[in-house]
Length: 104
Ligand SMILES: [Zn+2]
Image (cartoon, rainbow, N blue to C red):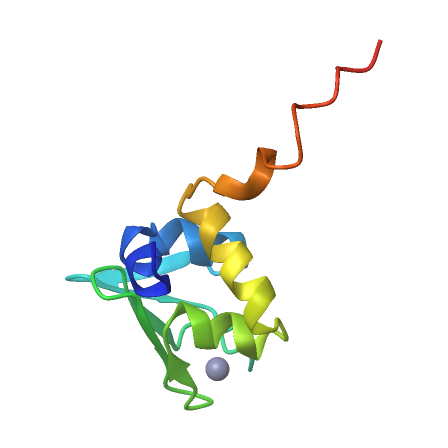
């Protein structure tokens, strides 16, 4: 699965909620909430249909990848976060042998 495919599978609303952006208002498909970067109360807009966001106060914008980048994650971490968000099964997980026995 490519990164783009993963992004289209994401529940963007739930994704941003995890990062503390509660939707305060919704107009059509546009959601409004507080910006995690400039702390403005209501100018962070995002659209769950295309996954794009923009803050009208600090003028930052992008998609979920640039959002995570701005939070300081590197590309490897971003891919991992998005895979987990999308429920993508990481196929190499068990390639080192069987699962260890559960703790007694
Ligand atoms: Zn902002």
